[in-house]
Length: 68
Image 1 (tube, rainbow, N blue to C red):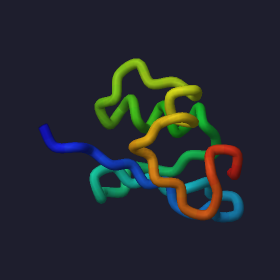
Image 2 (image 1 turned 90 degrees about the horizontal axis):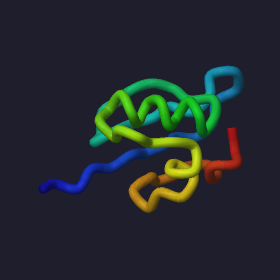
Image 3 (image 1 turned 180 degrees about the vertical axis):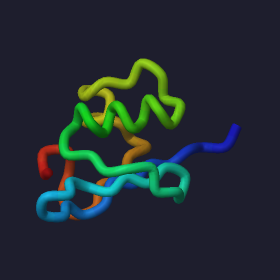
């Protein structure tokens, strides 16, 4: 099985953070809850805010899960 990747890009004023899954743009998140929803739609069933805050597969650019 191929390992999947998630990149949460730099925050942009008023637009949240762009999210890329496996190199493809999948939306923008303004919170951990929003990121969890994007990941659920991308195939990570049962993902919640705690999961995304602690996930080793997420690469955070421009600050970690506390920066929006």
